[in-house]
Image (cartoon, rainbow, N blue to C red; front, side, top):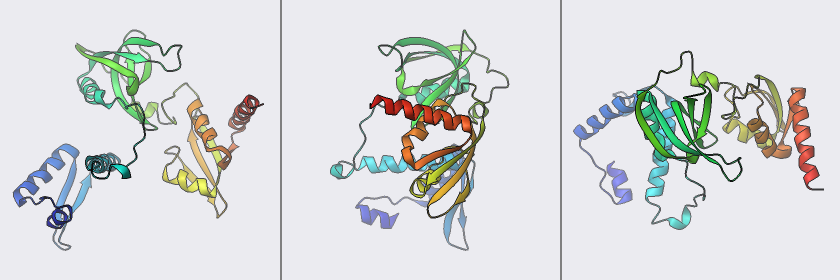
Length: 270
């Protein structure tokens, strides 16, 4: 910390008592145990309840730190211009999920005519991330069906004091186990085999298409991967975005669907 203070021309030095308090708070809040290793003279993480979640927290903190000094290096940080993700409602939604409170909000549908807006009353069950967007998984208070709502299309959130009973035998992780994103339209999961160019393979290995992804074979020219998932519309659109760097090998039904959509795309250019 002293060395970092010199490098940054700031005072980051803290007392041992403050450090020990911070370690205790990290354990209580993030469920991460940090202990002193006398043999190596270092502090280290000895237990992490959720490594993936911890990595994301650290990643977000690092981005925050980078953006917080952006005034001095504004020409060197290029941020994409896009609509906000709706994360301002995340804390309230988690509060409602935890306490089983019914909620009401206005939701905008992009694919409907004139971006139709409707007021929704639902039972919030979970939050899910998919392709850099956040979604609310909820049960409709009247129809008792499960639906997903994009947080970036949500406004006027109202958390009531009306309690609901969490649906029995509903497991959010299990519901999306075979999904690529948020579509769960009843498409049955099946084995999918894809051919990838060598260059594309490195990218797909670093950012897997699905948690079931595994490499079947690989050489300096190509890579064959296998997945077990539902070939829903959003997955097909992802494959189409990869272009000529990917080819569906199995199943034949998915192969035919890809050919059909590619031919339809070509017709638009004729």
